[in-house]
Length: 90
Image 1 (tube, rainbow, N blue to C red):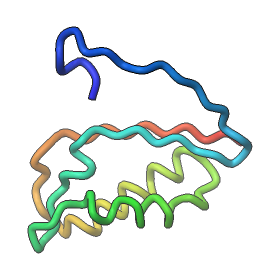
Image 2: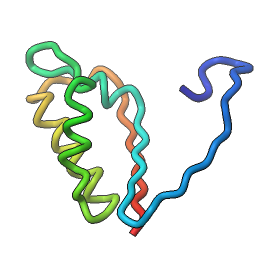
Image 3: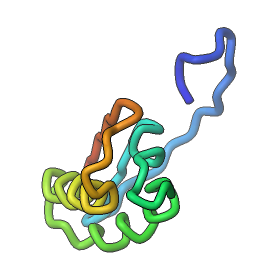
Image 4: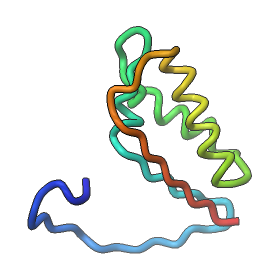
């Protein structure tokens, strides 16, 4: 959650991505995508990430996540914005 609370404090840290590792950042619009049954994609997100983990590039990883989200949504209208950023170390 960045930029929402004035004066918010955040911890600083670092990590190294090993070859093949990926980092995925997303807004709440991804998890809050409604499914046909009223459930949110948040409950299916871990499985979608695991299924997409074999993607060979950041673009392929994002494509797999968007496809999983679209399949989950079954044509439901988005209730929120959606931003995804992925980085994969080759």
